[in-house]
Length: 392
Image 1 (cartoon, helix red, strand yellow):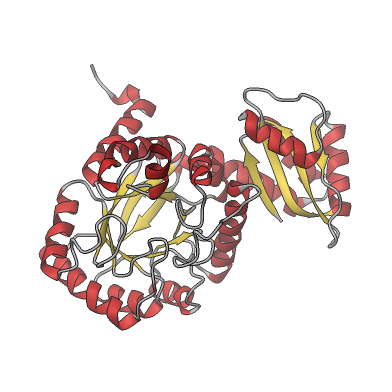
Image 2: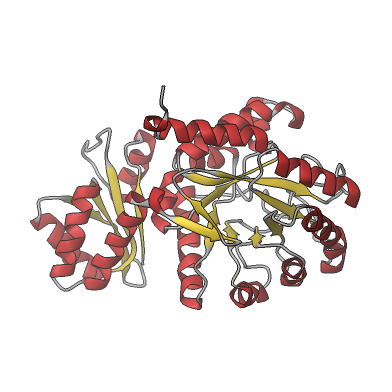
């Protein structure tokens, strides 16, 4: 069972859900939200629907699936959803009532949360930057520029000096169509860079961008403090054990397929809900396993159509319901180039605009090639939300 609060105040999203639930009357309002409970036992769903209707609120059920489950949609706002969660709990559906309330709290108190990385507290009332350092010959934007260890170290220090809160170092390209390399090759690329940067800047927070537990383990032993796994811990089953053993934060990303195949005709009925389901389920599984220090990434450009990437940015705050900070990487990506007919070197301003929208809509970590610009974007967004902190 998965619970999501949906931005039905977007007319195109309301239309999509109207089709899904066969809503044949005009209930659209400019501030309308939907509380969707997916994969709910059909008999329970009918009882919950009765509770909701008795409270004179509006809800809809899908037809019963083959496994006797269905989806339920409640229309309203946070106040209505909160009251309903209490009513559902009082009438004996404690687990469901608690889960609804938890999702509401995740969204409403999102900016009050914190995440601890290398003993540093990152408050989620503002955003931070992951500076991208690709030690690869073939990454889509800067492949080969920093393949030499000396150049990579120099650029890593430059990124840190120009606003990167965290340095994200990767030795394997994840561009569309990229071939996988061996763990040995990846280790040879990234470990000398990590060692030297830590030697020159001991307080640097380094993220290792890898899907291989063997690479991650050696990186951690040499100073890395976060694992950023674009597979969402799905390519290497040992990665989850390593994260628990080392008690280290992780970024789990959504990807459809793998870098070699991910852009071969990806398709979604509802891109946000489908990504939400996968990330929600992974977070819950990790929490049961004893891993709580998690950042989620919906995976812009990883098995997504151009329009999917824009919809993710538009509805990004829906992922707040999962209760974990969101990382977004849009920097110089092809969806910007394809939609605006721009080469990689022409995408700096569109990147900055997309990053600003992502921050406005809930991103708290921005993975970027240009942390100096992103840092300014972070600060402006923070001041807009906290203008009373200014004295003049």
